[in-house]
Image 1: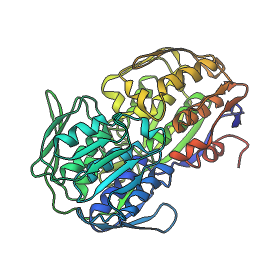
Image 2: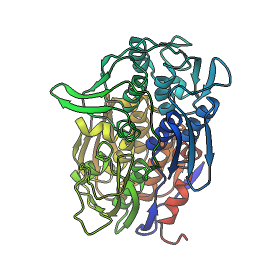
Image 3: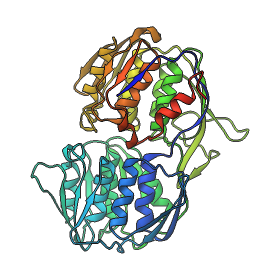
Length: 455
């Protein structure tokens, strides 16, 4: 349990957020499948990413650490994984990313595997990966016969398919594309809108033959069979999903002015910035040189990048936000940031509608229910819908009051309501602050560093 009070003044300071969780996962995965050593800087040492490391170590991959986010992954090649036992029992903790993407890799191996996680992961839907992998020739079954993990996987010779994904999901797409490296012919995933594309960018950097084409019926992502991945250094940018909490906090606490260093602004991930700008937010992308800063949604050349990932410094100033309608193609590019966007919308002037986000119901918790419950307790006018929220913002920090918040062991719920507490009247109590270790172990320390009066 953690008790929080409103910020006594404007937030100030310069902060570097931890490395991107999605990029960190993928760097370890592709580094393990490459021929040779992959050096990773800025790796996020969170519980989820450590689960990915643990799984690959159980498959014989040597991964050495040298502190401060530096890893060296000693790759074994696409067919070099060697489990300690057959079947390999792999524990993925709370990480749905590890579970779903690894299933694609394991579906082509010469050994059997069992993928299992904690109670939350073992309740999340896996039929969305079971079906396409089965079509490719793999044997993937839900041990409890409920289309959830634990999953029993028997590797096989995989076949190329064209798979139309009913939802835009980076985890599903990545699972199929990594399985496609082992297939006997090209594999194409068709998405209605483009989900985060970290896998495609990193595969391309490691030498895979992969293309993305926008067509009338959606985005066609095609990977050709691959015999070898070549390691490249990966510099992981700051995670925009982690930056989102400080962005929202600075926009909500009057007279705040902060800078966040080296934040990833991949155009399939920056919709949080675009949505807030629609609401009137003052968010500036700072170039490293004299060039003109780009607009969000662009993929600028001049910003630092590694494995195809652009990044920039962000300056955020307190803003008078107004309501907006957020949905459609913006949603897949900000699905993890929607809880804290709802918090920001509660302090905006007027109605905000967040729609097309039914995926929130099958995350670590039912985040639509969790956000609605918490903001209602804090006095916000919020209504849950099947696929999002309707929030009638009253404007200003005084529109929220402190309350007891049930975090549901969900890191993004805990961090979102920590932000809300800064702009509320009175004390806010989180029933479980330890769950932030899943993605951001030092979150509360970093948040305190921006609050006046703290060192």
